[in-house]
Length: 603
Image (cartoon, rainbow, N blue to C red):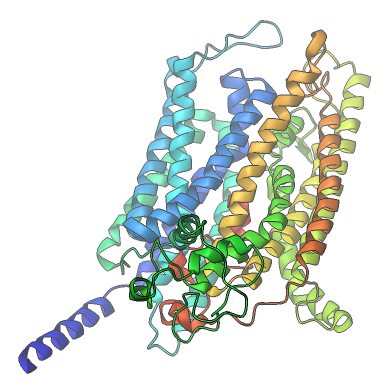
């Protein structure tokens, strides 16, 4: 027995020594390069894609915008699946590797559509002739590239940050928290720089060198990303997959359904509910009482076999309360759907910018139409820094709260600013359209004398609305959930934007079909001067105002949102969590970082 014990100890020591030789800061260039090049490749394509769809595939403005809305929706939904696969089955390394190669394949297919003439309809001038629509096979090739890129993003985005932190996780190192913070800083800096490069350099290349070169550069960058990531394979710490939190939610629902015919025991009864030893949660709360049946002990002898674990037949009281916490925030989460529509308005402003005066100082230099999203990014980034360093200390003196504004107040302010953003968009478009009609461009394409930089205020307001609302949402979820659910907050944010994109596509489809009846010109017609995009923006403004009042009702109904103090975190193995984040749950971002929202909203 002593010999076997010594062998076992030697095995443990050798495993620890082997693990210590892996990971560390030497792996950071490979991981950060992978995320950086993926961002440059993907975000750069989204900024200008509406022009590719309308010019090369002869899509109407409404049809092209719907395609991009749905592409963005899938791209924001897939990270939830990627996180689940990473946590439950494949592990982060495999999911990132698969996502990288699938993204590369998607980019390559898109590049082929630009290279092969038969992949797109014949070229034509829509101002003098009727253009031939794309064939089903041509659209299938295009849509397959979008689908592959969305699937690839679902593998990279939810795992990259967590995988990088895995390389630095060392509880025995007293400087571990500082190392992690240093990694986070470098990670966010690289992502921010890559996104700014995407909406400027990549868009400029597409405008000046054409689609073949403009799509070829992202393919080359993505190939470099894949090569660099695999070069560090032998150096990585590769954590094994563990049970996902989503599985725990499914277990509660399953157990509650199986016990649906059981009567709930009296409130003051003892010994009827299953809970882990030492837990503060021994009796479930009265809210959503139907879920309490999931933790009722039906057979004491059999169910007590699960005293230290849960099953599909009986769950702990804590598990039930975690699911209740998630359900409780859903009304406030739903208020993020409409703002998800407004912050994803990238296609129509690009089409507007194409028809406006984009000159900078001289006739030869023109600002790229797809690069105006840069102003939203800069506004968001600058405001986050100013708010954190200047505004919060000033507000704290008056509100007597450390954070200045509460999370719910920040969400509400973001919703209010989104109303102003849409009103500004409508007024600017009205000014552009009136100028076009006055200059005789009502029934033909042309450049109006109105400066395209009139679009800057609406982009700045969108960036400001996102800074308040999106970050407020994330911090709100983090304050209401236990640490074991920290990944759920960002997953909800991404899911809200995904649903918002679907709603945005639905609004455009309904508006297009209704307003063009009787031979009338659609409000979202391809000819912006004959259309009424200003009416479209006013509709979004109206929906945003209704959404703001809906939020006020939800916020009032939710009640106090004091940070949860009574979650017994010792129960969920804090030793497995990192000092700052619950990276075991594959969060999409670090809380409070604005950079994730650039990815989520597709700027």
